[in-house]
Structure formats: C-alpha cells, structure tokens
Image 1 (cartoon, one colour):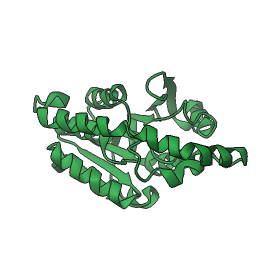
Image 2 (cartoon, helix red, strand yellow):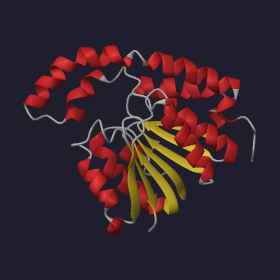
Image 3 (cartoon, one colour):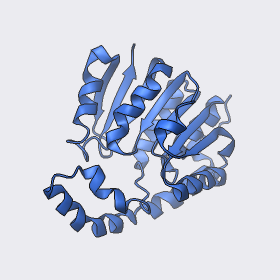
Image 4 (tube, helix red, strand yellow):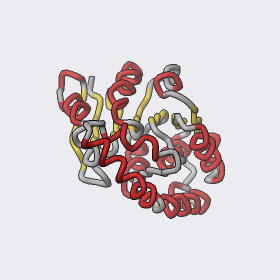
Length: 224
C-alpha cells in the first residue's frame, strides 16, 4: 500500500507543527520541577521517579529529527506492526502511524495517564491517521500483553525502569531484523545504563549502538 502522502500530508504536518510548538512549554514544567527533583536526587531517588509527579502535563516529545528517523526506519524495514511504550500526547505516534498508513500496517501505543491517552487518540484522528492507530490506556505490561506479532518496530519512551521489562514482554514477538529504538539515553545515562548494557551484549540477540540524535537514541536490531 502506498498513499504518497507521508509526513508532507498537510493534515499530518499541521498537527505535528501544532504539537511540537505546544511541547516547547515543557521547559516551564521542568523549571517548576527542578527544585524538588534536585532535592530527591540528593537523597538518592532515581531521576525518573523524581520527575514523575510533574509529568502529567508535559508533552515529553521526540524532536523532529527523531520523528523523521522513526518514520523512515519503519518504511525501510517494511514494518507493518509498530509498538510504542510511552505515547504521551501522541507526537511520536503520529510519525509511526504515518508510516503504518504507507505500509498498510498498524501502530499500537500505550499510555498510563488517561487524559494523555485520550489526547493522543484525538491528535491521531485530527492527523487523519486514526484507522491505522490503536492507543491503549493503562500499564504497558498489561496493555501490550496481547499485542500480536510479528512486531517489526518498537519505540521505548516511557518510564526508564520499564524499558527492559517491556522489551522482554515484546521480545518473543519480534522477528529477525526488527528494530528497537529507546529514547533519552543521554538524559537518563545512569538510569538506562543497564538497558544499554543488555542491548550491547550479543548473547541477548541484539546488535546495538547509541545515535547522537535528540537526547540520545539506542538503535538496536534484533538478530536472534
């Protein structure tokens, strides 16, 4: 299936422009959160835990260059099933769902915060991508448990301590050549060190490298 629309589709481009602009407000969310996060870090609280109370209104998007990489990787891989952990307001979901429209595939996202899941669905509909997208609300370990394979592509962009559990949940449904991309590798360097070490160990079936794009993306290929 080929629509010829891609990311240049005016409907998709307009919603992405709007959401990327709105996401600039995250700077104020993070600024308000900084004092309490710093205090919790001094007490040894993991960064992901320290910021959790402040994130319900934050977009926490992938930047445009990472979105384009998601879209192009999905096309290059011929992906027809793309799964995302941590959909938030749906910015990365739009990039992946746009690729699924091109391949005739399906995007599955999961988001724990109810109003974010609802907003992501609405944004995908406004972008004209609703029929290729399924955003599930709730704990990813439950909402993705019945996602059928083969899964061609995975984006990990939720709470960092769940990257490995979600990966292990989905791994039996990956095919040889499936791509797993994990965001925020540089921002959460310490918290995600175990994930990076796991993906770099060939015994776990992946070939992996960190791309210096956005806040650091671990780009991994499942090779069985």
